[in-house]
Image (cartoon, rainbow, N blue to C red; front, side, top):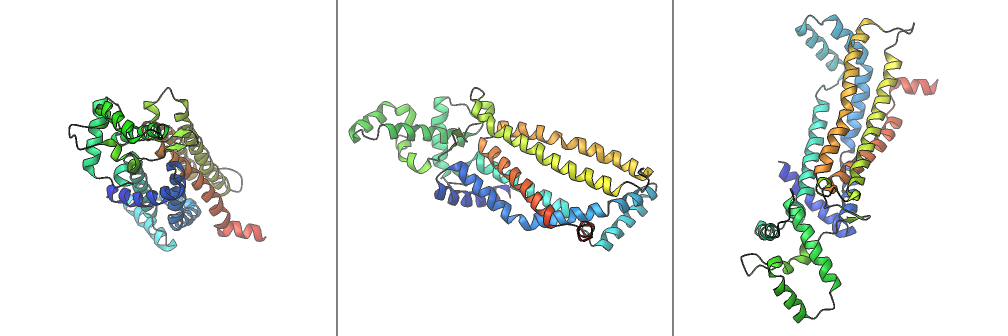
Length: 324
């Protein structure tokens, strides 16, 4: 299923690439398009989250009241969901969609020749054989092929004024670099068709940070992604803290025993949220930079989306407060 979506997204990314002629800008446009398609789901998720927050206090009371009776607890919670027309599994659907997007984009960025250019697997195998003969080390074979093709493209651009005879002679002298065991296969026949412009604002998106530790530019996008992740989590934490202060405090400024018990669990979950950026940076550092760029743009768009939706999707209490 992941390959199906990666293949589908490949058509879209290839279409955008043909328009802008740059892999990085194509990914940015692709991120905007995906976010636009996902907007109805995001709006529904935001509405569900606000509704859940309003029911949080009532749910805590039910959990505390029936904590020794799991069967009754489940019945009361399901009755609450049914009465308020709230689907407890709506968040699962959104999480599944996000996971499919994540894996599909990873497949796409890892193997752009397969999913974006739809290159014949036989041609990819021949090119892989050449890369292996050269001893090029990379965990991503198609990325290594793209680097090799791009280097040939850039070399040929410098020597465009050479005559056809000189170029043919150069190809013969570089036989080990351009041909595999099958003498009918010639790399130069595919240079123009397989070339992908990976230069994004001076950063090569085909590079993998852990494989290019001496190139500090490969760390720029992952670092920006981690910073954006911390900002996003901070925004969520501030919203949660605000709701806690507004809803969980009694008139005398003290917390109930129910609140203390379940707020401890909430605080533990909040602490776990901060581990996500650390996990994300490890993934971003071992994957081609195109993936980290997609994550970065998606994070920025998600924060903007959250701000806009929070402004327009106000709950009844907020509207009453503003109208007062």
